Every structure is written in C-alpha cells, then in structure tokens.
Amino acid sequence: MDRTFQVDLRGIVDLLSHHLYASPRVYVRELLQNAVDAITARRTADPAAPAAIRIDTPDVTGDGTLRVHDTGVGLTEEQVHQFLATIGRSSKRDDLGFARHDFLGQFGIGLLSCFLVADEIRVLTRAEGGPAVLWRGYADGRYSVQTEDQHRAEVGTSVTLVPRRDAEEWLRRPTVVELASLYGSMLPFRVEVAGVPVSGDGLPWHNRERLSEYCREVFGFVPFDVIDLKVPESGLTGIAFVLPTPANPAARAGHRVYLKRMLLAEGAEGVLPPWAFFARCVIDTSELRPTASREALYEDSLLEATREALGDQLRGWLMKLAGRSPRRLGEFLDVHHLGVKALAMHDDEMLRLVERWWPMETNAGRMTLADFRAQHGLIRYSAQLDEFRQIGAVAAAQGMALVNAGYIYDTEIIERLPQVEPGALIERVEPGDLSTAFDVLEPEVELAKRPFVQLAQRALDRLGCEVVLRAFDPAGVPAMYLTSRSATFAAELRATRERVDDVWADVLDALARTDEQDRSQLVLNYRNPLVRRVTEIPDPDLVRLAVEGLYGQALLLGHHPLRPADAALLNGSFLGLLNKAVGHEE
Image (tube, rainbow, N blue to C red; front, side, top):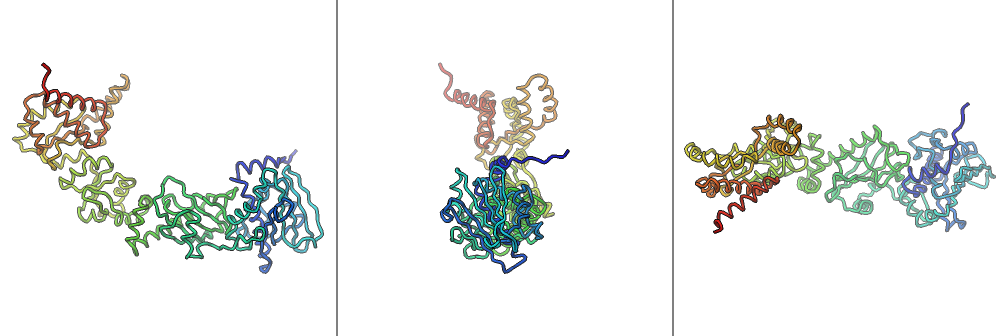
C-alpha cells in the first residue's frame, strides 16, 4: 500500500534557515520576486496593467505586521491550494501558460523563507473576474483558505507577515528599506517602502558618467578602466571594473549578479575565468540559472560558455589597449602582470602580448623577450631565482646574456614561446653549465698546478664536491660553487644514505651508482690574486684550510643552503686559519 510522506514544516523551515539561505534577510527578496512574477504574468496578457509593489512596515500598518502588495495577476482559490500549500511546486508560471524565462521564480519554496521571520503568513489575493481568497499559513504546518467578497480586494496580492518574537528587527522600516533597495533598486517596476521609492535606479552601465562613483560604492575602489560585457546567448549585459591595485590570484573574486534586474548575489564566484582575478563585474542576466538558494549561479554548460565569452571580451580589451595605448598597457601590466601571464599559459595571443610588452629581469637590465631575442638571438634563461642570483653577474662578465625566469609563470612562458614563434630559440642554463664558459689554463700552467688541485680535491672529497681551476671574469671573485639539479639530487641521496638503516642504504647505493658523475663544482678563479697565492703555498695543511675557506665563502656568496657538514667545515677552516695566523701557544 502506497503512503504519503509526512512533512514537518518546522523542520523544513529550520533546514532553510541553517542550510539553504545564508540569512533571514532573503525573505524580502523572495517577496519581491513573487510580486515581480505576478506583475510580469499580468502584463504579458495586458501590457497596460498597473505595475507597482508597495511595502508597508509595522509603523505604517499599526498592528506590528509587514504587508507587501502587488498589482500582479492574482490567484484563484484552486491556484491558492495548488501553489501556496504545496512544497516543491516549481512555480505558477508554467501552469498559468507563460514562458519560463519571463519569471524570476525557479523553485516553489520562496514563500517558506518568510517563516524565517514570521509565525503566520496571510495572503489575500484576487484574480481577474474571481472572488478574493484569503490564505493563512502557520509555522507549525497548518493553513486555512476562505473566499471573500470579490469587491473587497482589487486584482493583485497582499502578503502580510506576523513577526516572530525574536525577528521583529527584520521587519522594521530601516531594515526593510535597506533590503528592498539592495534587492530591488534596478527593478523596472515601481517599488515603495512606507511611501518612499526604492527602485528606478536602472542598470548602472546606462549612466557612463557615474560608473567610477558606482564602482567605489559597490566594490570600494576607483577602477583602472571599465569594460563593457555582453553575451546574447545568456541574455547578459554588464560591466567589468579593472582593479587599480594588485589582486591576490588565490583569493576568490566576488561579482555582483542580477537576475532579470533583481539582485541575485553580491559576491558570486565563477562568473569570470580564474585568470581574470584583476576584474570585478556587475552583470544582469535573463537566462543563467540560479541555485536553489538563489544566492549563486548554477554551474552548467551555459554558465561555462558564458564564462568563456566574458574571458574573450576581457582578452579583446587587452589587445585593443596594446594597439591604441601602449603606455596604458604598460601601467596595467605593472599592476596585473600575473593575470596576463596566467592567460598566456594557454592563449597564443596573450603569449605574444607578454613577449612584446612585459619586461623581464635579465643580467643586462630589464627588457622584453622580443627585445632580448632581437639583441641576442638565443634566449638563455635560469629557471630559479636563486640560480640567477648566483650566476647572473658572472655570466654577464663572460658575455652570456641570461634571463631570470624564476618568477611565477616565466619559465613556462619562455618554454612555450617556440610553439607560437617557430623561430624562437631557447636554452635553459644551470649553474653547472657556466663552467663551460670559463677559460681553461695554459697547458704548462695546468700541469704545474696539478699537485695543488689534487690536495684541494682531497680536502673536499668527503663533501662530494669537485675542485676545478679555471680563469674567468670578474677577477675579484675568487671562487664559485656551481651545482645542477642532478648534482643536488645526488648530494641529497648520499646524505640520506648515511642516515638510514642497512636495507635502505643498499637500495640508495644502487641509485647512487647511477649518479656518481653528478657532483657539484668549486671553481677556483686563477685570475684572482689571492687564489694564485694559495696555489703556491707549500704547506699541505694550510692549503686544505684555505680551500675549505674558499669553499665556505663561495657557498655564502652564492646564497646556497649550508648543510651541517658545510657549517662544520666552515667553522673548522676559520679556526684553523686563525690558529695558523697567531701561531702555537708556547
């Protein structure tokens, strides 16, 4: 035997208040929505029908209630039973024969939101040619319906709320004026609260002179620029305001969204593509769907297509800015280069714009990739900021131009450039590669210094570092510590092998044997006078201490992290050299 679900209305109201709606204030929005839908329905059949919504606050009604009256289509007794007493009914629009997109309402739970602030709801309504019907609903789930003399009410609907004891503040005039202005200021119908008009502002993008002031009122900033938005497929019009200051890419951007000129959300997310975090928009749409709470947009294929279309329009604005005002584009990139670079990761036109207009750091000064290519042909780049700082100046002294690609997206942009510009040549440079640009010593000098190199190598063997004697500029740099990703990995592998048990040590031994050639290098500069004097020291112990000191200095100057073994070596060399300097105690 089939049975009917039993619905606990108090439980439903609690569910709405704690899980569906963010705040009881939405009751004003739902009442306005129902009134707008009723007026829309009536004017569809009779375009000359009156269109007005009047809200009387408790100080006007005099009995502590709030009353909302509209000049809409009204309901018959049958429709009252059908729509006001049935939870989950989609809305009256389809049953009354009107197209879905003409109405704001999408869910038949709007009236229930009034129970967030009221214990009793009274609806007095009259359809054309029918009697007036009075519906009373209570928070405990009871309701009653009675017909009235048809002459006691004009066509339309009046909704009266009897407030709960803890909700009177939500019905007071200042609160209702604020909420009605927030949700209904752009409605095309006249809306009054206690005789004061709160609608009629119109769409803000129709008043170009006031856009900066509007942006400051809504978002709290004066825009860098204003971009018109339009997507006919989703019935969308609006504007995007470009932020005048940098925005956090990880922060969720909130946008102001209206649905058929009724405010849907003050901080809707996902309206613009993720890379467009430099813009805040205000839009009005007639086709995008709201969520059940009517506080966000429903994620579907239409919203996705709309988001892509809005992204295309923002991208088009950037391209136009590059063509008509390069100086202005430069100002924009100074503030919002992260967003543009993020877009360049998958958009060819934006990649070309970044190459041409965004200056990157190089060891020859800041310049765009286009200028760098024009001057040097090959784009050599360092993928990490620390690596660039370690080798940038020395590379410049060897005549090697180098781009610092250690900032976010820069490496990916350079590596994607050949896909867009087939003639672009790129080469990643690691610190270990720099030694190939240094000059080799004369054969007789190299032969004469071989004993010194052997002594120096024995001093650093336990650290997995190779000692090389070369000549390079600037001569004031006595030594450089050069490493690579593979050498760093090999060093970490050896350090880990010393700390683990025998089983894991055997596993790491097998891996380490494949990386025996990957060693960091201490390159001693033979053009440096100090290094030349060190190579001539006859005392092997003093040579060891000097080489250890040069090793420690190279680590510090190159901003390399110091391992415990490095710190111990640096301390030991300092004390040893100091001891040599002051002599042994008598």
